[in-house]
Image 1 (cartoon, rainbow, N blue to C red):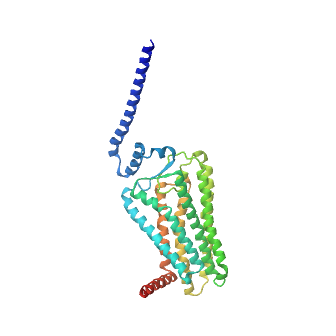
Image 2 (image 1 turned 90 degrees about the vertical axis):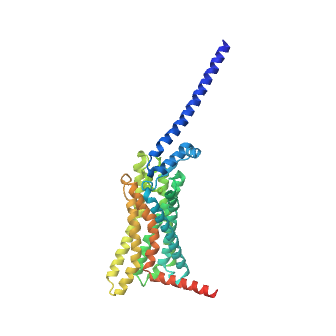
Image 3 (image 1 turned 135 degrees about the vertical axis):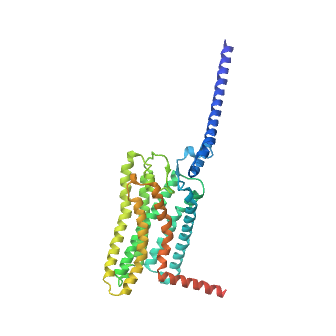
Length: 375
């Protein structure tokens, strides 16, 4: 009897092992069949998404995916024919941003005639633009010519924190520059005393610290909220409105109100300062009797006002609308404008009609030519 029971138990165990092996084989076969059957049916615009999911299913990154939360950034995969054009445009704008802003900072440092508060703040704006674009463009270029971008939660929060800090710093810095222009036009005789080097350093530091404080507050609020929706963004960066749409409904309203209040402060308060400054500039220009004075004031303030309109127009559209009405498909094109295009245009805006910068550039090139002749 004992031998029969042992034989039955051995047979049962063998059958269970055979069934487990069959199940494993069936599962593997099913996965392979699904991949082979459905792969040709995918449209070209979903090939990047499909390849990412296929790699995940086949287990190439199974260890990482099982323990680390990842965000899938779809980028411009819904516009496959536009991706090569966007790659060339983004790369060109990035190179213009780096070279244009670096040249502007170099001229402002080397030429003593540009050692004024206006160019001091302009150097800070150039540094902000370079950092702002650098936090966005390299991953964007990778996603435009490669697979769909995947970021860990920490990487996504780091990108959000960096872009928010630099974008917020630019908001405050543009308001500071508007105050500087108002002081130069409305109080020309007292301008040197008003815009002292100590005050300029304090205002520039306040711009950087204000951007960091706003970024830290909003990133902390978002990181504390649980996310319920699928970790998939129809965007090329981890942008705040898109991430807020992933928050759980239970805490979304409170978090959204707190973050909206922070966005109002960082956008509308500098906007009010800029509006008040240019209202004062307009009154001062209207009271001028000489046409030369009016033209000089217009050329001094026109470039800055153009930069303000380009940046604030797109940033206001992105951040001052309710989360539920934010459309990621349209929003990513608006974000592309103020994160990539505007920083590339700023050096051109501030130099094309600026005789002082043109003169500094000519003097710098002349000095280089004389050095080459001597050698």
